[in-house]
Image (cartoon, rainbow, N blue to C red):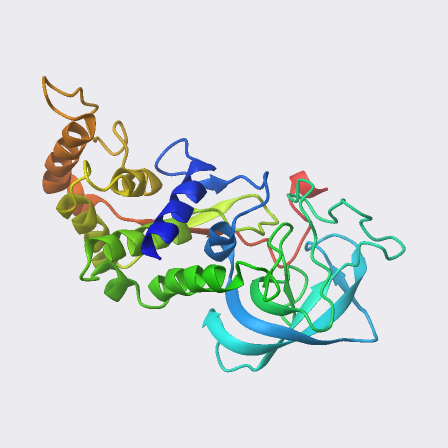
Length: 305
């Protein structure tokens, strides 16, 4: 199971791009996001069932500052709260039907950033794993980002997908415990899950701008410990973890190296990394990215006018 999760995380990293240590990784939305990417970008992950669609619609801004659009509302009963869910038994998903008058139409997305991704129209009886965001137009509703369709129980791979989702979110709920796991493979898988959760841009970002805040120092120390303890020549995802955290040769003063005679390239890279970590690691901090919030008053940003 951990091997499957590690491969999924490596695939998620393969579609992320970074320019400088100060910039977050940005996940491409073409082709459709994997389940791994959906978990990473979700604000709430739950197992639930659509128990009904409200007969009345609600008018909501798809993004703050835009005209309001009629949204249908699906009521989802929570069967298992996996991440970001506390003290509630039901959630409401607001969505724009693709076939409604004035709606986005088949294959079109009613909001910036969708890039032609599939939209999810909830139907009563749908049951499975849902990946939700707070609706940009109201704190009372949630939304499904373009392409982030749920994994439904009818999917032949549902049990495997659910197991992988649970393995990932377990790291989010107790990061210190996850980063201190006894087995090397578990520790690395948890570290990759957390690194992506912290460094991948959110699925919904009205401004297109990002904020960055340091994670607790204890977690940063544990990330570095994973990278210094594991043998990069034996654990292919260890250097990928370094990449996910921006700890690549040339960044943060980490030297660019050339392997010597008989020395494996990854061994040379880890050797240089360890020397850097011993000297400068205490000054490094893992930073979590989030969407920069729109101002609550005044005109929308120029890019949205």
